[in-house]
Amino acid sequence: MRKSLQLQAEMIDEFGACVFDVTLDCEDGAPVGGEDDHAAMVVSLAALASDKARVAVRVHAVDHPAFESDMSVVAGKLAHQLSHIMIPKVESIDDVIRAEQALRAASAGHLPLHVLIESPLAVRNAFDIAAHPRVQSLSFGLMDFVSSHGGAIPADAMSSQGQFAHPLVVRAKLEIASACHAYGKVPSHCVVTEFNDASAMTLAVQRASRELGYTRMWSIHPNQIRSILAAFSPSEAEIEDASKIIAAGVRVDWAPISFDGKLHDRASYRYFWQVLERAHRTGSALPADTQTYFTHALA
Image (cartoon, rainbow, N blue to C red; front, side, top):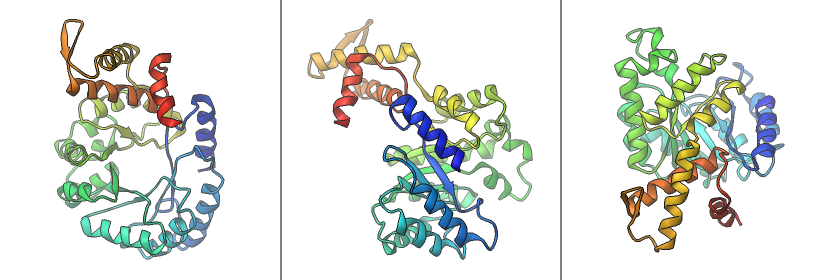
């Protein structure tokens, strides 16, 4: 966790903005019986993050004995420093409501919730979960999802290639992405466990974004972060075209235009503005006149 926070700080200095979140883990990171001490350590680490950092905490699942304590300690003491709270193993809207109630009890009712979808039942309820106003993002928990099938899905479905081949896994990913886009939430793709294989990582990110509609992705090792950013970033050609199209739209007060022989109007303007937003979020270089859009927005 300390290394992740340090890397985040270094990349904030490099890019001038925070280009990835750090999620400190109270669930799998805490030893059995040491949950309270671990939560206290997480609080002390998160408190050291800079104002530009985006730091979140994954607490225990709502049915775990440590959940209420996690929420009281973590959300209660870091209510104005965290970007969000992550809730694992969410099965239904009732779990979201329980998490929201715990936030309010900790005087942290303003914090967004990110939820992990990790079972067939959770996939079935993904649209209801995504519809809740407190939920900001849905993440797919690949390994727990495969394990929840009692051996019916082979272990290969957890690999970088197998997770894009098994029908049940791909269906779950599509349901989660569709639920998020239906309600304006962020779909976050699962991890790639082969953290030393840069090509496998890059291919997985490309497939997650281009084929399945994901806009964020988890890493499990610092080696993966730059590969994720690079694969999610628009190409230089995409940034150049988007900059020109948006500039042309501004000049005509968003009336339709012709660009390279193609019609563009407000529908495509919205798409190309999103290209520029994605470039900005991933630390890509923007033309000076385009960068001013974001400079003014941050002023």
